[in-house]
Length: 226
Length: 226
DNA sequence: TGATTTTTTCAGGGAACGTTCAGCTACGAC
DNA sequence: GTCGTAGCTGAACGTTCCCTGAAAAAATCA
Image 1: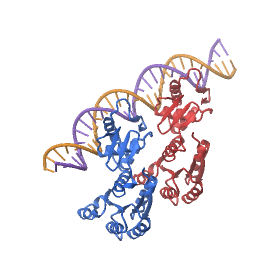
Image 2: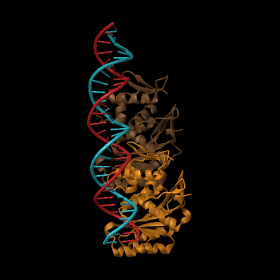
Image 3: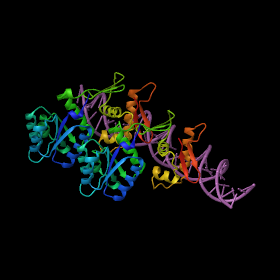
Image 4: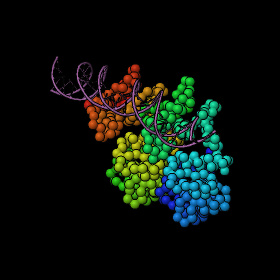
């Protein structure tokens, strides 16, 4: 069984608004969250808090993300995910990034962060996570695989994300706008037709003989019936 | 069984008139409601009240909605619905909004707010919210389905809204003007004949052999008898 | 690099939906 | 009874929504 409330996450960023945004989201998911606005503070908080995962911004005044990462790792076992703006990703940064376990380029969707955190937890604290079973679906976040009636589906990354999201929210009508916000990120500029295209792909791969698994609720969105 | 009286809602808005309007409506639905006019007050009220849902205006003097949201979430599990004016919705706001569980753009219909509150409750406090059962009707807001004597009705989105509204207000005469206000919005420009057309469609789909479920009260409106 | 897969865009078509309208019916007042 | 009004009915219309096939763009891989 998967219990977010057992998992401790440390957020470090000098931008107050980003910190709030991430904290809000993660607390909403049930995680224990602590925040820090600079490196010194981060190291101090971590000493008592002993987080499983730290999410660090690379660019911070004073101690930079790499230095913080090094100090945190000295204190105990934890996974580090680095955040960096798009234009900061040069070779130098990439090289230093090796100290981290994963990194993400801003802007990113919240769901993407959740996925990364999961992946890291699976690697370093496998006892904290497990496979999710929902009706005929078995979702394996570590392997990025979904089985339907035991049969492994061949899904692309986006197809996986979408099906996972739909299945975890089965029985609930999800609008295309909501899906776009959650999976593509709030700053996605495209048309919501893309959701229709992916739904079509998923339906084809699920191809249930008798029944529609992903139902269209015209004007409102889609809903998965188990 | 669905009992609004078990559900606690906190309203936060600096505009007295909006606060009153919403409070009146929600109390009328049977919810426990507390109000606050600013962030500090909201956090204080929430400490004792422990609401299930908070409805926050984004723009408030002093602490803004995001900050209040963050503090409320720290105090305990609750769903947050943000309210925002149309011209405030830029990408920055949208981004921060993801921290909230849902958001609505003003102006909105009261029925829409009720629907959102339901949706949030279903997600975060599923034990509080079962299917709504009213006589022979079973209304499932998450699935957007209504059953009559156990039989699933095939309804369009507007038909669903209308039947839901009528059934939840059974025994009360609802004028066409009132129905238009609630479901079409106060700025609907059309004729009220459209309500007659929809009522007709519903009657056909309910097609009760012996009894008229949706009664016409000539000159006044319609009333559902269970 | 070139080849392959994945993601995204685009345009057309068809069905469902929301809305209007005009003719008709039923009710109530006088 | 009849007259006016309110509600009912069926059809028609324009629109929106969703599905679909294909192709362009981007990412990934060899």
